[in-house]
Every structure is written in C-alpha cells, then in structure tokens.
Amino acid sequence: MNTISLIKPYFWENRYKILIGLASLIIVDLLQLFIPRIIKWTIDDLTALQIDLMKLLVYATYMVGIALFIGLFRYVWRRCLLGTSRRIEEGLRNRLFSHIQSLSASYFDHMKTGDLMAHATNDIQQIRMATGMGMVALNDAIVLGTAAIGFMLYINIRLTLFVLIPMPLIVLGTRFFSKKMHRRYQAVQAAFSDLTEVVRERFAGIRIIKAHNRNKEEAAKVRSVSKTYIDKNIGLVKIIGSFFPMMLLFSNLSLAIVIYLGGRQTIMQTITPGDFVAFISYLGLLTWPMMALGWVTNLIQRGRASLDRIDRILQTPQEIKDNESTFFMVQSRGGIVFENVSFRYAQNGGAGNTMILSGIDVCIEPGSVLGIVGPPGSGKTTLLSLIPRLYNTTQGRVLLDGKDIRSLKVKDLRSHIAFMSQEPFLFAGTIRENITFGDMSIADEQMQKAAGDAALLDTVKRFPNGFETIVGEKGIILSGGQKQRIALARCLLQDTAILVLDDPISQVDLETGSVIINTIKQMAGYRTIIIVSHRLSAVRFADQIISLELGRIIESGTHTDLLEKNQYYAKTFHLQEIEEELYAS
Image (tube, rainbow, N blue to C red; front, top):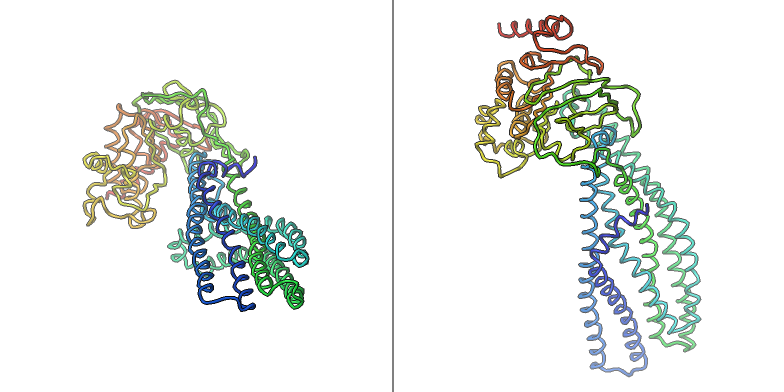
C-alpha cells in the first residue's frame, strides 16, 4: 500500500485552504522578486545622478507597500498551509489511537508502550513538518527558484549560465544523500521508541528503584539506551552535516562567479551597476530555493520514515472484530457455555507452543455462580478473558445464551458483561471519576450504593474531599485494597447480566472480604456471576466450582462435593481455614 494514501483524505478535505495558501505563498514569492528591480532602478538613477528626493520617496513607498503585502499574504499562507498540517497531525493521531484501541489484547502482549508513545508524538510531528513546511519549501524551490533564474536571464544570459553550473551537482548530491537520510531517520526513530520505553518504565517504577537502592544501575541502563539514541543521531548528523555545507559551497561558488564575471561586465558597461546589484540580490533569493531543495529532502525523508512506521500499525489487522454475519443481542439471560475450549498465547505475532487452556467444558446456567480456583499459572485469568472476547479461543468455542460469542457484535457482547481484572487500574483523576468512568449522568445515590456494596463508602468518607479525592497516577495515594475496592465498585455500578470478578478480595482483610462476598451472594439468581479467587471462602457458596491445574479442569462440583473428593480444593480449603482461625485468634 502506498503510505501517501494515508494523508490524501486530509489534503482533499482541506483542498480549498491549501489552494488559497499556495496562491498566497506564490504571491509572496513574486513580490519578493520585485524588490531587486526597485533596488536596480534606485542604483542606476543614483549613479546617473538622475534622481531627486521625491523619486527616492516613491521608491521607498514601493518598498513599504511590497513589505505590507508580503506580510499580509505571508500570514494567509501560514494560516492555511501550516494550519492544514496541524489538522493532518490531529487526524492521523486520532486515527492511530482509534485503530490501536480496536486491536486485540494479544497485540499489546508484545508491543512496547514507549514505542506506541513515540508513534503518537514524534512520528506524527515529523509527518506534520513534512506536509507543512515541506510543502512551503518545495513551492519556494520551484516557484521562487524558477522566477529568480528567469529574472537573472533577463539581466544577462551568459552570466546566468555560468552561475547555474553548480546546479546539476546539487541535484546529484540530493539524490545520493536522500537514500542515506531515509535509512538513518528510520534508525533514529526506532532508537527514540526504545529510549521512550526505558525512561517510561523507570519513572513508573521509581519507588521500587529507590526502595531497592537501584538508582545507579537503572541510571546506567538509561545512559546505555540514551547513548545508542545519540549514536544513531550522530550518524544522521554526519549525513546532514555533509549535505548542507555542500549546498552552501555551491551557493558561494555561484556568488564568486557573479563577483568576478558580473563585476567585469559592469566595468566594461555591458550591464549597469543596478543590474549587477540586482543580479546579486536574485542570486541571494536563489540561495534559499537551493537550500530549500535540501531541506525539503530532509523533511520528506523524515516524514516518509515516520509515515511508514505509522502505516505498519494501521495495517495491523484486528484479530477481534465484527464481520458481516455478526448480529446484535438486545438482552442477555447470562447463560455461558465453554465447549472444548483450548487456548495459547501468540508469541510475537505467531503461534505459541504451550497450551494455556486445554479441553475446557463448563456450563453456567443463567443467574448461577461459578467459582474458579487453582494454583498460580493454572489459567484462571486467561479463562475469564475469553468471556468478553479479549482473546479468541484457539480451539472450541464460548457460547452466550446458546450463541457463539464470535457471532455477536463485540461492543454488544461486552455491554452485557461487567469485568473486574486481577490488577485494578485507576486513572489519575478523582475517586468519583474512576468509579463512574467520568460519566457525569450517574446519580450520586447510584455511585454511593456501588461504593457501599464494595465496602468502600466508609473509607471514602474518611478522606477530606470524599469522592472528589484525587487518587494520583495509577491511584498512588491509595492502598492496594482501596484501589481494588474502587475497581470493584466500578464493576458493580454496571447493570449487566454477567459479573466477572478476578480475585476481588485478594488485597483486603478477612472482615472486609466477608462483607464483599455477602454482597455478591445477594446478587446470585439475578446475575450470572463468575469468580476467580485464591481465597476459597469467597467461592464456597457458588453453585459450581472448578479447579484448574496446568490449564485443565481437574475437579468440579459444589463446595460439599469437592470436600468429599479430598483433592486440591479440599486440601487448600482446610489449610486456609486453619490460617483464618489463627488470624481470628
């Protein structure tokens, strides 16, 4: 796919502004070309002693008038062209973010956050520069350069031909350096992504680094990645550092030719002193287009490298998506069935070797409660993530009310499920915003009831600002149990047929955990509830309990049934019972 097609829609949408901007830019270029003519007239009249104060005032008035019009039209082109480049930046960033949001959870299993941040900031900024100032530099190189050469030919053809001798060398040099620039810009952008990720990780884990006295070691890692980034930039600077001096060399070579040959023709009166000064002025105007030719190459190569990187993300297919056969489910009773489900995580976009889940068969009746237990790494969290289709099953299928969830609209499916993950995530806002997801239409009574059900209300009341307390980045001012209860309240606030809870009381004390479990018990019969818990007292009331080990169901039944079997569940339950008795005493 041609990556340029990514920005075509934005150019088409702003085509009139671009045309107005280009027209204004061309007018500015043409007005600049008249200034050397006025200088020529002034010098010729002065050398011929054929000028008075009134004529000097007229020439000065011309200059002021041209300057005013240049300022006016320069404002217009900057507003139109640079404004359009900002809109392209906004549109691309929004498109990139929307696409990233649509990608499946497996994409983020192997994609660095720092890399995505670099795409959304640095790469898109380079595209903005290429489409904004790149367009300006290209226009100046063509229009101003061509017109300046035209005026120089008008003054003296022979002298102009000598001045243009370095031009083919500039074209050849540009073609030679542009390919090297493109490759090195890609390397710089990749190094910037790595640097962003390393710095982000160290800032996010600054408290752990300090607690373990790892300041020097982590600083050394940052220095190492930073040095790599600098080395890549130095490699790029070597190319640019050779390219631009080459442009200046050829420009000064042209100036030397003008000084010698033009001065000689002026002495011989082949051209007038005014023509000589005007010629040098046009050569000065031509210097910018020559530089612009190099600069636009620089910008376009950098923008192209960034556009290629953005395009690779946008071309990443959506693993979890709707298709033509998917349909809406207006209401759900909450019945869930796992039919011979197996699952493995993809490794760097390919298939993994180890099955995380194998041959899972479970039937959950509407309004019933399923408890899931097992040792760490047994696949409990993975099993839960298949219900809202965060991942697709590798084999088998998951049914909701008798329908394969892959046949349902993804957004519709998830609207019937309230999902609490094992690691609670809080946004850097208030407690209210975290519980309601920023939905200001939710009444205080609803929010407070959800907080009460999560055993959170009394805790919040003890904060000076109550629900308006700012929790900080990732809820840094809160304890683990408080963060977990806010995440639970967020989940309980949603009126859905299915409630999926991944270890909801792992970070709270026994007394608070009992209050939460009693609340969840009261919802049984009204909502289908699926609970994963390492604390088995949280699932003993469930209608059905399954124990997982190495991704397989090793036992299932009610609390009483599993105690009689005297396997993993029974042994773990008795151990925890002893621990709770010791805690109570």
